[in-house]
Length: 449
Ligand code: TRP
Image (tube, rainbow, N blue to C red; front, side, top):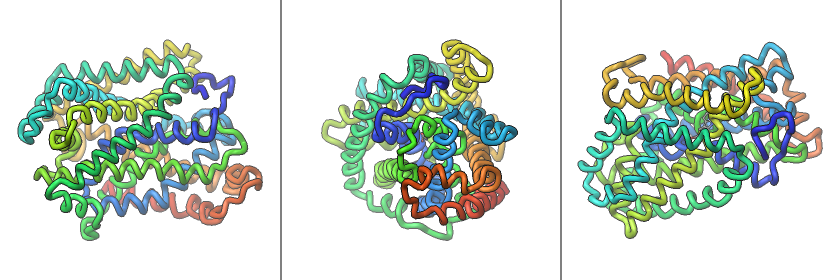
C-alpha cells in the first residue's frame, strides 16, 4: 500500500499487512513510554480498570467507526467527512491539528530514545546504580542543546520515510520488527517480574484501589485510549480507506485494540515491578522508563545487548507511529494546497521540529514556565492534545455516525452489505449513538473541572 497517492488508490497487500500497519501506528511511545508512567501517576490498578472500561465502550466502537468511514469513502480524513457531509470537514481539520501538535512532543521523546540507543552502545547503563541513572537522565533532558539535536534526528528519520513512501520500507520491516519487539518485551518482562520486590509493582498495576478513581483519572484513561489506539484524528479513517470491500471490519476493530493493549500491559509489567523493586517513585512521570529500564538491563545477563536491542525496537515502534502522525498533515496540505509531497513534508517537518523545541526546553531551562494547571509546556501540549482535542474529535465522530450519516448506512458498510454477520450490530449502534458520546462528554467535563 502507499499512503502517498490519494488519486491512485492503492490497497493493502494482505489482511495481515493491514493489521500490522494499523497496529504499527497504534503501538508506539503511547504503549511503551506513556502507559506505564500514566498508570503510575493515576493510581496504578485504578487507572488500568478505567482504561479497560473506556477501551470497551469507546475504543472498539470508535475504531470500527473510523474504519467504516474510511473504507466507505476511500478518502483521507478531511475528504471523507466532506464527502459524506460537506460542512463536517472541520472535524478532519481538528485531527490534522492534533496530529501536528502530538508529533511535536512525540519527536522530543523519540529523540530521547535515540540518545538512549547511543548510551546503551557506549555502556553508560552498566553501573546499574539508580542514583547515577537518575542523574544521567536528568542531566540529559535538561541540557539545552543535546535533546534538541536528537529531536532533530528523529524528525529527519520520520521525514525521510514519509517522503520516500511507505510501501517498500516500513510495511516490510514492520512484519519482522514488530514480532521482534514482542519477543524482546516478553524476555524483559520475565526479568522484571522476577526481581526481588517486584510483587508490589504487579499488585500496584493490576489490583485496583477503587477509591483512587476520580474525574482526572477517568480523563487520563480516556485520553490514553485515544492516544494509544491512534483514534480521534482520522488516521484510522485513512488506513481504512486502503481496504478492500471484503475485509471483516468488525473483526479488525477487535484485533487491533487487543494487540495494542497487550503491548501496553506488557510495558506496564516491565516498568512497574522494576519501579517497586528499585524503590522508585511511580508517580514521577515521563522519565519512568528511561530510569527504570536501564536499571533492569543492568541486572540481566547480556544486559547491554538487551538494552541496545530494546531501545532500537522502541525507536522503530515510535517511527511507525510518527510517520502516521506526519502523514496526516502532509496529505492534507498536498490535497488542499497542491504542494508537492516533497515540499509539504520538508516544510511541515521543519515546523514540527521548531514547535517541539519549547517542549524540549521545558525539561530544563524553561521548566519554570507553567502554562496550565501548573503543567510545564511539554505537559500542557500533551494534555491539550490527548485529553482535549482527541476526545473532542471522538465525540464529533460519534455524533457524525449516530446522528448525521446514520447508523444504518454505517452498518451496511460494516457488514459488507450484509455479506458478513456482525453480531454486535445492535450493541454497537446503541453505544455509538448514546453511550460513547455521553461517556466522552461526562468524562471530559468531570476531568476538566
Ligand atoms: N498511537 C501511537 C502511540 O501509541 C501514537 C499515534 C500515532 C497517535 N498516530 C496517532 C495518537 C494518532 C493519536 C492519534 O504511540
